[in-house]
Image (tube, rainbow, N blue to C red; front, top):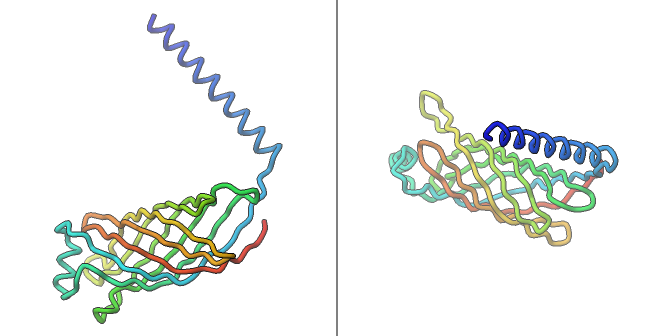
Length: 188
């Protein structure tokens, strides 16, 4: 009985896989998707709160006489590929920031985020983040960043509003970032 059930399950999964494979290849070759790309690069600014987790990051801020709220100023490099007929857009973002200027310091941070933006402007993504700490032995601290937000579009001017959580073993940071970008479109 068990052998028959396993054989039936294997046949079902094989049939499902073959059917799905034929459906995907037929669509891919018969109906090529026309893509368009656009750049939404522009300035970004915001605030980062180091969350009270008792981690090494909080200790470093206290040692430097800094509070847990830090300014962020930077530039957002963004590349978007989206279907010409609409649908979700695939987004790659590189965001270098300088933080802490209100404390007389410059804390460089860079994030690389891979995400998806829905036609209504909602977006989400994740990727690596690196912060220069200036401390031995590594001088750089890495983290995972998870981002979520909405881009408001006003006649080709995009105003992104984003929340990002960066997490690693040293602590967690929650950032609110906003800015603007003027769409530069090109067809592929």
